Image 1 (cartoon, one colour):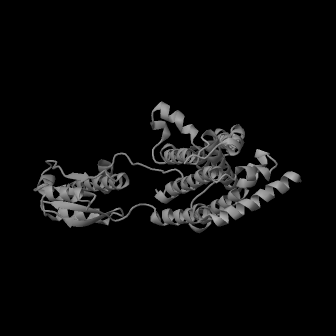
Image 2: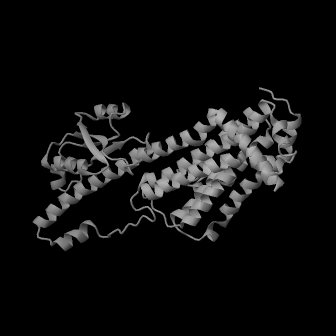
Image 3: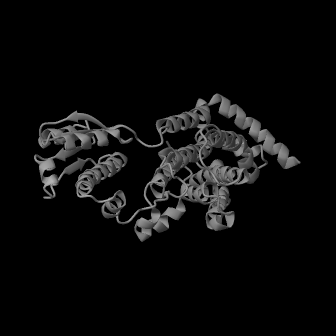
Length: 389
């Protein structure tokens, strides 16, 4: 009971600190909610649509115009300009007016009908990876459809049946299945890692910032005195309110994406709650650990910032970890966001049992327990260290 009263006494002290210092309110509530709304509305369409492309049509035939109309009908592509030369179309790409263009050479239709296999070209910019990849797929598809349409007309004129024409033009039928995300929705697999990652960034920083401010203003002794020098009680009381606020924000985030936006999930609500708890505890634990390693406001927050930023590259959402070099694959295990993302993918998104992700569960628990190894150093810093700007 004594310890509980001390924890509550320290928690009341922290509430007053949070009230006086507005940076806590912005970093714990305002900025996370703004990031949540920003990313989910930015990717609301799921995939980019009606991306601008151009056409260089030197053939000016009914066949070439039909190709352009079909290309413009695709969901991802929108023909916004016709250019007289390839040089002008290329300049438009370099000026970011269009992402790609289709080049149809002169006498394409005549060569097609004569069976002389004309060549059409398409150019696309990979400066934007998503736009370039999606438009490349549309341009490649329209090129294939153009040759197939001429082949179908020729074979039909020669008396082939529809079944014979279909077998000749597409001898192998492809049955494609996109597991778990058949919509190819960017919002479903980017927002679910970017938003938690940014929230973990705020948790990292505020955890180190809270201890650094005690050291900066020389209030560490007062803080420890309320716990009778027990650093474990002092830590629990100090981060109790922050933990509760972050949990409320994370739970609101989960409610918003699953019940309002209807993100797909196969896992249970209990698994989502467990993942939220591990996310908050592991993030705060890492922030305390960073300050324990470097008992300095500036250095500890720098470590947290670096670790959080690198987490986005090494989480495996944008580029697969197994495709990276072996040393980088090993380093990726040192980032909490990587384990959060794997737990989410395995147990929530795909609905597999928790035992399949036991290693990532243990890793997040380990991050939660990291402060155990540095609390003595944190206490020593509060009692003996002199703040150096």
